[in-house]
Length: 353
Image 1 (tube, one colour):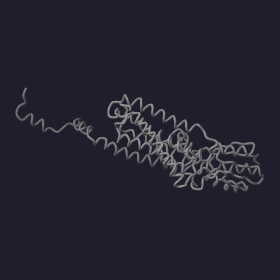
Image 2: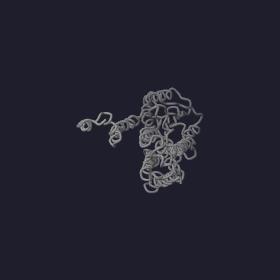
Image 3: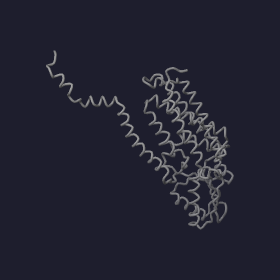
């Protein structure tokens, strides 16, 4: 039935309902823009919190140390003073001789050696290469405990950092560069080369991982001279780190689409960097960060490169297993789920070259 004259015009002039307004807003670019406004604001605060929480006031939690020699009364007072100064965080391991204790330092089992073999003196051997922040804490605490116990204390650095990197931060910086540049590269590859198939995308990722890692190692070693690197070993470790970090973004891309940067940034930067042990060694980190860091790509990369540079005879498989695990799992999720996912992300893997 036809509407009376004027009724159709009044309906056309009727204000849209809230449901209609939301529908229009949801289909517009203003919805993701609004979401981003709140996300950026929240992430900025969380970013500041995570780094301040980890780095602002490092506190010892569990510091493995070696003790050589039977402690006398003064030596016992010294160890008690160290425990008190470090809030009971020392985890003391007794060794029958100095050679065994020094071997424990080389295998990164302990961070320092307390040599109690002299009757009225204690020699404290620290290893800045094992963790500059831990060595600094022990260096500061030992003289205080010695004065309280009436014992002479001699502090030595038996494994110093290289001259071009006295604070031991260069490895943290190169690992950070590898992680951040790699997933940013994966984002740009998705934006500017959406038509690439799965095999081509993986091939490009491997290529820029190898070249980017080579560039990082060459700049730090050859051009700046900050670190003398075992070049091939560090180059390949950085390449594996870059590939693993890139594929983490690819994995989240096929899982949640355009918001993939959020979990990638959270995992790699908000959690991964403060917990990595690169800027502050794990015994000084909050317990949770100290435990989780070695299971994430940044912490695994720092652990592997750190050993390659300073303890080449005592490399451990664990950090490489962590990096390889992230790379394999992320690649499998990207390749398998990307084919089944509808929408724009399907174009990424729908036609392998």
